[in-house]
Structure formats: C-alpha cells, structure tokens
Image (cartoon, rainbow, N blue to C red; front, side, top):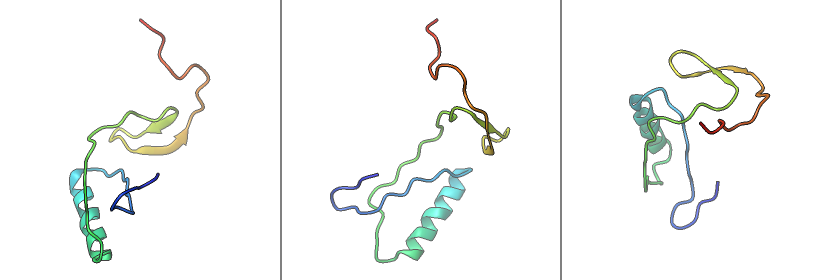
Length: 76
C-alpha cells in the first residue's frame, strides 16, 4: 500500500466488532503519541475470500479449500 501527502502510515485491520476497533485505535494512539489520526473509516462487511472456510461468527477457520472452477458466477 502506498501513502502520499501528509500521512505516512496506513493501518488496515479486521476486528470482531466496533468495540475491538476502538480499543485498537486507542492503543495505537497511546503507543504513537507523536502521531495523529488523520482519517478513520469503517467498512461493516466484506465479501468472503474464495476458498476460506468460516466459523458461524464470520471468522476464518484457517482452512482453505482450493477453488476448481471460474471465480465469477455465471450470468443468470
């Protein structure tokens, strides 16, 4: 990932919930007091990665099943 302009660090994280995200942001602010958060955004849901098996709560099991067909769905 590239960063241009006044920012020089980008953090992307997947957390279980918003509370975990806020805790992580607070920790970063304590660990890097000389820095500052210029922008923050939250994406509430992302598409499942092809081949990863998921737990019912949406977290990855760590097991991957190779995909044998096309990666796009056929037109309906």
